Image 1: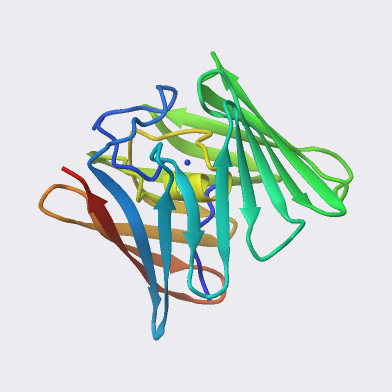
Image 2 (image 1 turned 60 degrees about the vertical axis):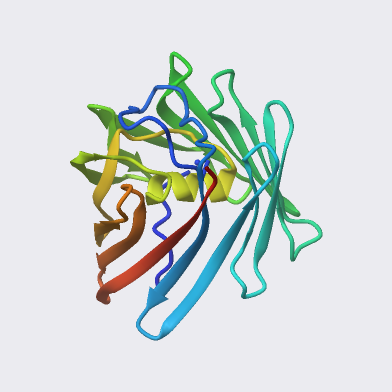
Length: 243
């Protein structure tokens, strides 16, 4: 079974800016539309993740209807992420002065792992360092941006490559943002354009998008290939818009 591509490392609100490169301020929250559900369909398998928000418009809960839910709470410079089905598993994101992820700690007792993010001028992601008692030495991941988009990531001796639709601005439904927000409650980076493809470590995905009349993403078809299989996973998005 294939789930969301985990781009290492987001608010699930439609950005007012149509041209916001990595290294700029995180996307502004649009008070008119919020992403409220994502339906995952693969052959005959499907489930829907519902998203709710607090009074400030920040993500407060995700629930996939399969017994998996996550809650998010906030302080001035931290996001607290709790697996609602566990009394001990919880994660903490610490933000830098520009609102990007500075550190992400995963608490899964007795193991506590940490990722620290390093930026150029505090806004452009350069590299991260992951430490855990389960590995012998820290792992460094390097991020390379080209014209406002993450094009290359080097991690664990592997190189991962990304391409983009340069005629389409990135939106919160793009996996790069969605995965960061739901995993960490914040962004470590943002791209200028919509992700077109991903490849690395014997795996590749190509994405095709459908939009509604106002330009919001309503579906993404993920055409994937790996060393064992290939297929298409389709994601359907719905929004709540407040005039």
